[in-house]
Length: 146
Image (cartoon, rainbow, N blue to C red; front, side, top):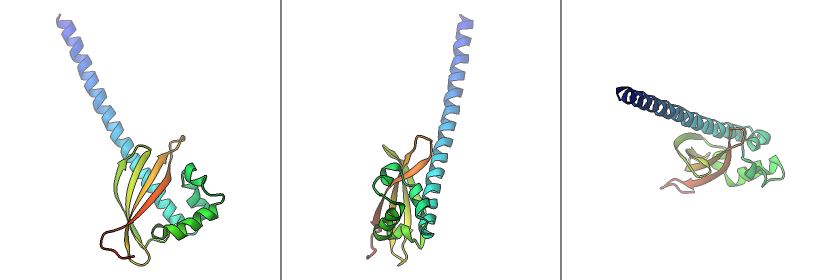
């Protein structure tokens, strides 16, 4: 009987260790995903600043790419409809959360006129494991006039 109890204790300790190590790996994966998502957003904003349509378009998810026949039309849509992220004076990352489709990353943006905006980026994990931008919602921060 003592041998059985000792065996269960060993199994319980091994299980506790596996759960602890697994949780540590999961936290690291989440940090890696946050970092990767932020990197994709930064790279796209940098591409917008350079008017590099190919680079900016390449960071968009296939669902977004499918809406535009050319990279230049995509860039033109961003120029007209998303000026705060097209030419931000500054930007700062806010909270990130998991969504049903991937990640939502909040970004505080100040546009070229000094107006503050909240941009909420949606990102989807691609089959190759990379993250791509699947959407961006812009909301003027409270108290700002447009």
